[in-house]
Image (cartoon, rainbow, N blue to C red; front, side, top):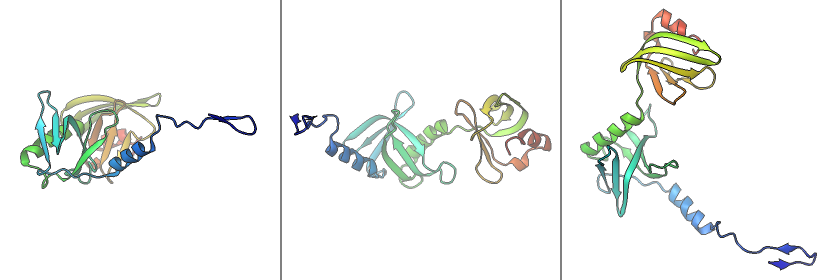
Length: 194
């Protein structure tokens, strides 16, 4: 600390928590895209039903698997990330059909089926709206289901002219692949959202 001509004390010490070089290095690592292939990475099943990854001299006892383009290119650009809340990307598989073995592909697809579990709504039994919420009673390809959504916002999204994605209050997703296959009564119930 030093005093200037106006008797103001100036603190010239550098905050230990801010390290510019460390921040630059972390930023560079984040921007670096590392492609994972059969040659540079080994995926394995863990006892708990998860997937581990060994790449070069790094080992991750658990990784998470994300599709970057889940609707348009589900087999391309698969992001492999750390399992914590920040989900820092470890690497990317450019093409799941070409860049990894069939065993690895099967393992990763299993993880993505769990992450992207989206029952298909085959029949709308009833929809009631009360106090800003809609209560759905539907039949899906996995059985009967009841769920609730917010009336406003983006709970119901068009993925194409005829394809709908519905997200409930808990973040579960449901799909209607083609609304033209619904009956007139079912479409009337969906009118609030179309």
